[in-house]
Amino acid sequence: MTVDFTTPPAPPAPPPGRLGFARHEDVDLFVQKLEAFEAGALSADDWRGFRLLNGVYGQRQDGVMMIRAKLPGGIVTPAQLEALAKVAETYGGGKGHVTTRQNVQYHFVPTADVEGALRILADAGITTKEACGHSVRNWTCCPFAGVASAEPFDPTPYVEALARHLLRGPYSSTLPRKLKPSLGGCCGTDCSQAFINDLGFLARKRGDELGFQVLAGGGLSTLRRSAIVVEDFVPLGELLEAADAVIRVFHRIGNRNNRAKARLKWAIDKIGVPAFLAEYQAERATIRAEGGVPLVLPPQPELPARRPLLAQVAAPDPGYAEWAAHNVRPQKQAGFSAVVIRLVLGDISAAQLRALSTIVVAYGEGELRTTNEQNLVLRWVPDARLATLHRELARVGLALGGANTLADVTSCPGASSCKLAVTASRGLGAQLTDLLDRRPDLVGAARGLDIKVSGCPHGCGQHYIAGIGFQGGMRKLAGRPAPQYLVYVGGGIAADKAEFGRLIGKVPARRAAATLERLLDFYIAEGATGHAFWASVPADRLKTLISDLGELSEADAVEADFIDLGESRAFEVQTAEGECAS
Image 1 (tube, rainbow, N blue to C red):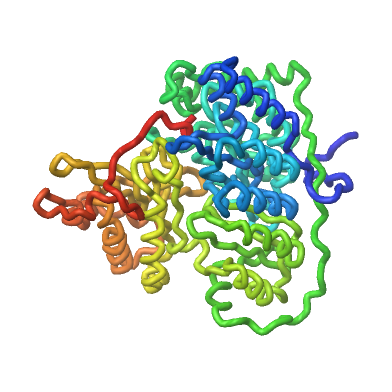
Image 2 (cartoon, one colour):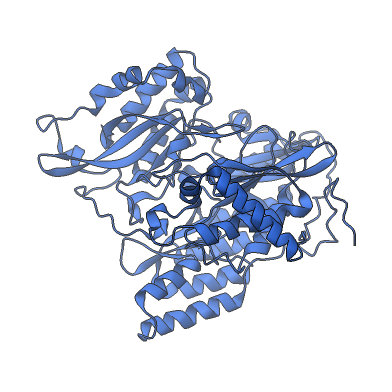
């Protein structure tokens, strides 16, 4: 059949719901390998590598694991919400955690219970395959894909096609290092964060032809890089070929000897951009000579039934207007809205997951999407039912307002579980959230900013691209370790690049909240309205602004300075070889 790529191809008649990504054979093999390891027939290193490629991490605590459920495009069906809820209540301490890569993670899962959790997920079509390790990680996507007013077309089928094509592929689990991919579509923005990913695609339109801009080599951590443009426009039919070409080049030229310098950005730096682009074009030619890679779009669910657009069916409850101001976004489809469900630090309970499995069918398109701000999005909500939806969400504790505002703090798990983390970043995240809840005046006045917290330089909390970012660290006082935070300002992602924050100081952990207040007071007093403001202020002025908060002598220190936020015992650095960076 000839496919016309001037308009998005119409999907075939859909089956009930989406097709899953899981295979039960993956879980069976996981159990076989575990038994071989326990019998001494598989080395610790080989078991670790296999385990990571199946989405199971070791934590800093013995006897427990972290499991990462891989959700391509951040899409979750009602049956999958039920499965996520069951894993949470049975093995995950009653909750799951939405990550900045749109996955759902479970921490502190007893090692003996991992198989049971994996089988529940697999039964619902959720895979953990290549969610970790040196692999092609989860494909993130704009949660508003298909309903955003400025997008050239809906990229959802294409992110799913990429995920299906590459999962369990010949190169996808044998890379020199992890490869984080992203695909987005909002014209004029980069809400999918393609510019900080190893491989990114942004939907574009050239005349009447639809396609994608191809990006590569972005990343955070100790070497920040904004992705380079590999091809300005690739037609839809060549999407998989372009992805394969970047991955093959990385597979061939990436550094396999030094894990600290093995990401794609390092490989590009080593040979230079022109040489990398030449390698990419050569790989594209090889793929064409091999017969190319046809684009196969997976079946997509039908759009929700268009309910009659009646008058509001319920009077709004108290708090509705404040909630709707930031959590409701009109769709390009008249009469419908997308609703952001704000989660505090990405946490969601088993009961809430189960409640959502019913809510998404009753009020939306029959599925949910996770976001890189650690929230959830329910789309295709008739405007006439928004007040009723607000009431239902409030009933299960999910009607918190302020989504995607200053109050919506992002944080990695930190030292509560990660071996790499220096500080308990979630402790600071919770403290800053409480502060902003008490100071709604700051949230209302400090428009255009976000706050992100990471427990170490690797930046899983994405603090480098925050308006105000905090990075966990350590200082010594009287020979004792004390937690501190490095303070960054001015980060963000523009339409054509990633911008990384400037380091302006280091403050004791217990003074981080006061530091935030001072920075916000300054920001508001200057009449600022966005991330770009910080670049207009001389660095010395910013450093001086918080310098007194960073000063801490032995004579001034109190016992609280030696206890991490949210903890009760004395602070100590316990970093080890971290699997989270594997």
